[in-house]
Length: 234
Image 1 (cartoon, rainbow, N blue to C red):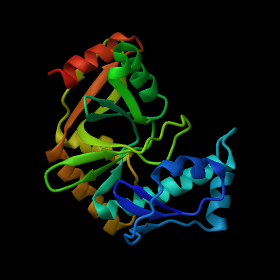
Image 2: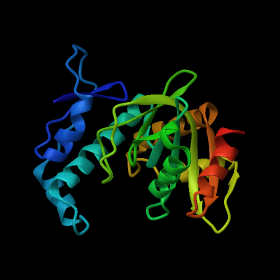
Image 3: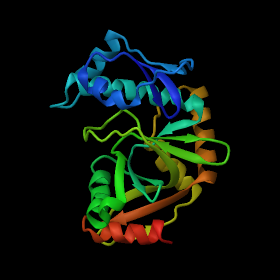
Image 4: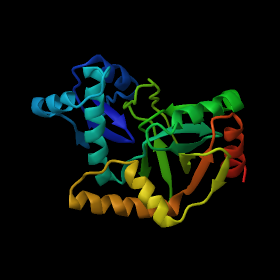
């Protein structure tokens, strides 16, 4: 099948239903040439399966495999994975990123409770950001971290927010060094030297195109309200 992901024509042929289902909204029938062709060897897939967590299905691992390959190849097209929950408000995308277990999905669901139908989640784990001349666009992908939320949408990127757990809710602006360190651990890495150089150039450009915040938060609904006041309303 051919899909349009982040305005890139991507060819992939999944064997399992998980990716087939998630990819349906992204299907592309136009005449553009393929930008990225994704395929995996049986040896690679068996290696992934040998390292999967308990309860993870083969279909979920195939989706992870396609995601991993796409996100590394997309770096060459000024596109990067930001491991995050992509919240949409007022026509703009706010990406809430955190280490596994911190609760990025829990936090964006607090926004749903606080602001209702004024907000929605575009992708709950693997959205991507594509850089253009003077702006950045956040895109949904058919790659999923288990929530099933993987919409084919795109919105101007308004901010990337890194979450940290704390008793009190607060927002601060990090410096460039801290941003790059955090971005590195929330994107596709373990890449070749040449690709790593392109990735760092993407980071540097992204710094000039969007806003970054550190949100220290607890698990109360006030965390969403403090975040809104410090990130959106300010």
